[in-house]
Length: 198
Image 1 (cartoon, rainbow, N blue to C red):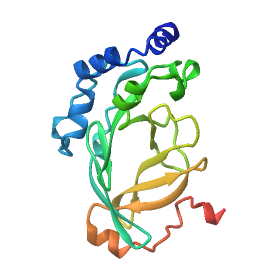
Image 2: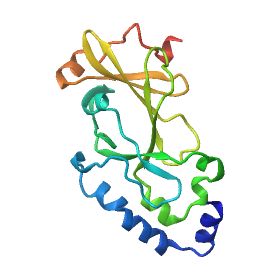
Image 3: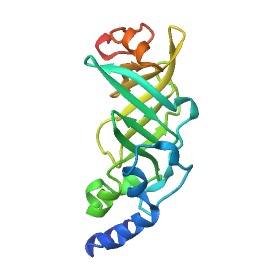
């Protein structure tokens, strides 16, 4: 695989990579619409490192509302996409070992363009502070822990716990309705793991 990437980069084969991206319909499906109904399970592109779309567990899917600095934030999660305040990432799995051999800087400009709205996603293999988190990072992200999304229950309601960092530490709680998000926007829950409590 590294030889193929090196070959393409040495010959500045952007047109070939663009052709592969067009055949995979990577750009058009992602950027022309925020309608998530066109998602399809498991499709793969021909781009190096792509192991297919990540299928978000059904219980995570839907629209969630939270507050960030007194401003409501809307999170829409579908089968293969996450849309946070109108920034849409198409969620992909990365091939095992790919990130051990390549960095984002190794890839061509056309590869960067084709994957600019991709995210690497996966489910945690074990619960952290009682929550099983889905982790989303930028495609080929080398530093940082990304964003964590975990299902939980607070005050009898299903919530989406938002967390970041190595903790991961809770940064917010998202609710199924704007009214619940407003009602609990300043509430810190005792069963959640906040960084400033440590």
